[in-house]
Length: 95
Length: 95
Image 1 (cartoon, each protein chain N blue to C red):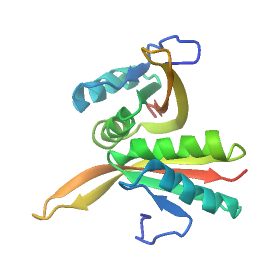
Image 2 (cartoon, helix red, strand yellow):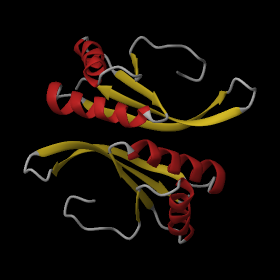
Image 3 (cartoon, chains in turn red, purple):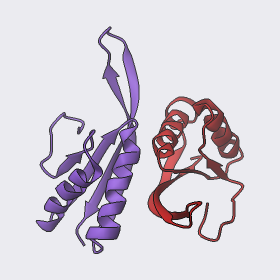
């Protein structure tokens, strides 16, 4: 999620699904010749790195990492308190 | 671990210990005025991002990310087969 809360249509959000689902989603965007941003929070950050590495090493060798950003997001809990969660964005360009 | 297998004394390897242990290890290096590299593999990558973010946001606000690298390492298994594991290096400069 970007700072203004807008979802970009070239972003892939890493969730609970199998790794290959996300690899395919990234491939679809790269095959259009557009940059793709893989986004993940908390424990799913490791999963995001797997998705990026598998995409570049096995399926799209011409692609390159354009930028890797890490930051902290503040998420509200049900009881009104707040939790800091690390987040990561991996930007990949098709060539 | 670097490509030639040498351990750098400004590197912090993320393992199973509590987050604050690693934050302190990073602080010691940064306080000497040297760059620090946080390294992690597999599921511990998420943990490495937490360590880096806590260090920069809470303890060392002048520090900056100098480089964030992700790659794949091939690890041998006991039965002779090999496993690909994602790895991450976060380089932090003290100012």
